[in-house]
Image (tube, rainbow, N blue to C red; front, side, top):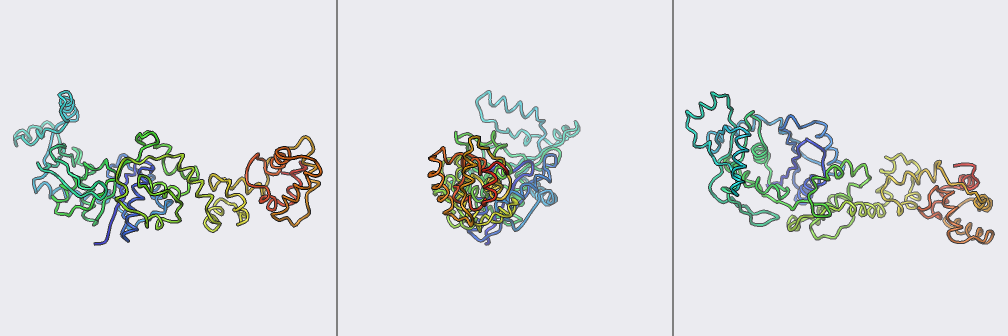
Length: 446
């Protein structure tokens, strides 16, 4: 059977690094198995789901290099879920309940006060037909629960290994609200069956959901997919990411200048024991991908480490790799000589814009009040300029002015580049050119 995976975000907000890791793990597994990647928007929550979020999620995945062969929206499949629910009713595995939210909360608090697990007591199962009719006459509309079997639910998890959950340790899950809308469980299970999903790769917080979905899948006559539950991401301190998601959305990382393959390589190796290294493509990452390596403790997402790795990746990028990105930034004169001149001093590719202005545009520079830079201008060698020009010029300046070290180099750098640090001037000088260098040194141009 062809491998089929699915990434199923709810379009109720922006994609964050935890979501992105789930999408990436599915994509790498799918590529390794030459399978099909399904993007499914879980948008049955009409009040919170937004089309702009769906578009943003799709754009984020494309930025990461993750494509999909099938796009599905659950809002288009409501009739399929209704038909499946009708089969469950006919099979007697779901039952109507009539408690209000306040009544359910009272039961929960009472159990907690007794130091008992807050499980639903299945009171609705003992209601007579007359009692149900009386409740409906009051105007109460039922919500529906799945009746879990009094048995152990077991599966061979591709990350956790043999996994077992006692069904009687969980409350019977709600499948349909009183207003007729579906919760997560039933639509997700129906989709997995009908779309032929073979592998579900997601966070370990879904382990209880898997037990329920296995029961549902079997009740609907389907074969449960293989499941893999990976440890969740935490921050550097080992805390959950939920409070920091605003700063860890893919949109924010893109704006900051993080390269997609820096993020991909970083997320793919977290918690695996594999050394972090630059990768050229998702196929490159997929070659080393194994689900079993994801077992163990929660993986720590260190955003500062990501930034350092991003910088390392930028420093190793060839001109062919970066040329389209430089063009997209509008740096039309950024040729190979320019890239290799500035690359090792960039934190992100976008930083090249400033040095493009240094070499080919106009910048604000610090004027020398002591007259040294004007003297240096008078000693500029004639063109053509090469990589040796800087050394020849500096040798003449030392001999003529007697300056050395910082007293020599700092005024020149500030006058030529407007910065106290940056790429080596021996590489920048031929790009700046004699006319522009002379104007800046003399204080007559920018």
